[in-house]
Image (cartoon, rainbow, N blue to C red; front, side):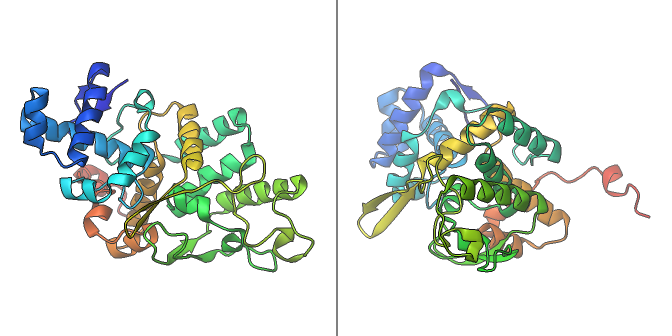
Length: 316
């Protein structure tokens, strides 16, 4: 079991529980200095540990209402306290993999390996392969993918909505944005899964429209054909949503590959970098990923410049 701090140093097994204890104390209103005095640590050491844990929760589990790659602050952690605590319930430090390079994208070869391992080891192969590819084809967040309906992917005549829309009630931030099903590989995987749904009678109707599927049924269902449960936690005027099942599915998919540091965030980073390489500006990348802050987009992009010999290679 290991937790990585912002500088890459590893906190060993015996300190993870202590980090969680300090994290909860800060969420409850105690200052870094106060927690440090209680724990026999400096203020900066406490801050480093607490933020390291918060970042792991954001990037490995997912904290609803918080962008995965933003640097947590005391104010933001306390604002989203319920979401952080919800994520902590699903946190398994022993599964936190070693870090890849901070801005490392996932290669096509790695995606193909993930597909192969999923087909070999998943007990719901068609669905899980489709879930994996949708993540890399749309850059949607796991909760958003869990909320998608058949009608978000299909038109009534059964054709694919290659240019769809992330509805406000689907988007984590509650704001509509473009949603593209423009990957032939991902669409083929979704189609294979929907064919399997038809054969198993999951979410079907007698109508010919939408390929015989109930249009408002979830696009991805449990093995038994039910909607993946989404928990709602109300705090004052704020509602927090969490779909532990889809997070567990993605964790298992990435764990099977043996690739260290790969998570749902890796897919969003991969999409951001591919779009940037194709000349897309940061604003449009943010629009597709549902990120409002420019810094959140930049955090997903390589911070190191390419070597000169790499950028001038084969200019003609």
